[in-house]
Image (cartoon, rainbow, N blue to C red; front, side, top):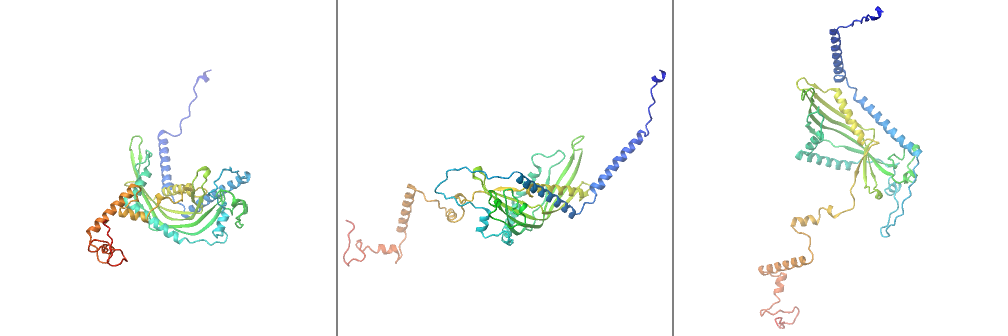
Length: 422
């Protein structure tokens, strides 16, 4: 009983409080040193390796999307939906149904043998448009104001100060488009030469080519070598344990150095039953190449310049932003206005000449009569004030009155006058 009442002895700690404190501080220092070495001063992988890795990821994603579409198409074959028989006008003649095959036949375009086009004339128009855009941007700093508003937004995180644009360069060169060719697509946006019939010649009478929703797509190569730069300045704020405990200035400059890829443009016809307008869809294939030059500056006195990890993070975010918007299978749609000519859109010609001379449209009713009276009165006043020259029409008319004030008939016998006073 006595042995049970005695408390067991506790084992003494191996390390003292001081030793534990030293070990903890050393572990924190080692973590900070490893973070600085591998995160800040670590060697970044080469540009070629990064580009090849991103291209492989994009290609695998595109192939997975195509395989899923082909699987769904095989499992659930589409059937043509019956159309409602609506009463149609007998005046407006409906043209025969046009398919992509008939369009290619009527325009003498063979997708299997037609040579790609150079698009030199289109490059000139695009260059002129971009040059005018750059000139307008320098006029009243409109693009600078819009960028500042878009970057700051309505709300910002608490740890981020106001973002300021310190440099903006829109470049000096222009994109060069070339090697344009026409590719038939089905209703899902897949090329008609893909799938089980890949490698065969285009059949304009096939079921996929004549199905509703099939369209034609223009593919062209785009190449741009320029220096388009956007530089930003801001501050990272530490608001704990109290507001503005520490402030870390950060400067970042991102430049687009090179872009090369394949641009795809197609038109999606309108659907009157669903009241959808004609849409222009465009995107880029997954084999594009986009190179950046990223410069960074962190700190105020002891500054860290061109941190490789910061450049990797920013470049990865920019590529993801671009991939999620305009890289297949994703695309952008732009609604096109009606192509019918309208009076309100007419410019130039006589309307501009009339506006310059201060002349309005011809009025009706009493307005026309009053204008005519006013013009005739002005003409009679002018005839009274101006003496006619010999040989003029008015001189010949006045010459028909003789010395006595009688009018002589042209072609009449001499001496015969007509008295028109009575």
